[in-house]
Image (tube, rainbow, N blue to C red; front, side):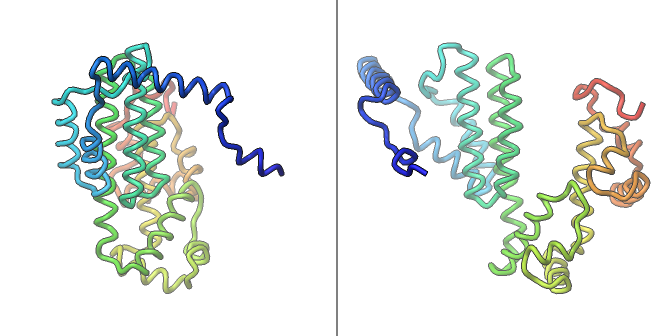
Length: 274
C-alpha cells in the first residue's frame, strides 16, 4: 500500500485546488463589495444546541427565529429550488450530528436523515422543503429528549449495558433474537442481563423485543403493501398467526382492523393482501 499516495494533501498546482480557491476568493470579494453577510453563526448554534439538549421548545423557537431574521445562507445553486433543497440537506445533516452528540443512536439519526433527504429530493416547491427539514429538526429534538429520559434513571455502567443491549436488538429486529445471544454480545450472563433490564426498563427483555417488533409491524401495516405473512417472515415470527396473536395482545386489535383503520394507501399501488 502506498501510504504517501493515500495521505496526499492537495497541492497548489492541483486543478481542483486552484478552482476551489479561485471561486472562494471571488465570492469573498463579491460579498465584501455588496456588503453581504451570512446568517449569524450564533443562530445556527442555538438550533443545534437545542437539538443536542433534547429541547423541542427551544428548537421551535430557533425555527421561528430563522423565519423572522434576514436569511442569507449563501448561494448553493443557480437553480432556486435546488438551492433550497441543498439548504435542507445541510440542515438535516447537521441536525443528525447534533442529535448523535445528544445521545441518540447513530443508526436512528442517520436513518431519519436518509429518509428526510430522499423526501426533500422529491419536493417540487421550496415551502415543502422547508416544512420537511424543520419537521426533522423537531423530531430530532424529541428523539434526543426521549433518549435522555430513558438513560437518566440508570447508573453509568448499567446504562452502558442496557444501551448496548438495545443497540443489538435494534440492529437485529428483522430476525429471531434470543436472550442468550444478546447476553453474549453484551458480555453478561443471560440471567443477570434479564434482571438488570427488567429493573431499569420495567419490562422483561423478551417483552421489550416483542414491543419493538410490534412497533415496526405497525409501520409496515400503515405504509407498506406487504402481506401479513411477508411481514411475519421479515420480523422473525414463527408464523402469521403467531404475529397476529402477539399483535392483538399488545395493540388490542387484529392486524386487519389496524391496517384498515390506519393504512396510508398513497404510499403503495398494489393491494397488500389481495
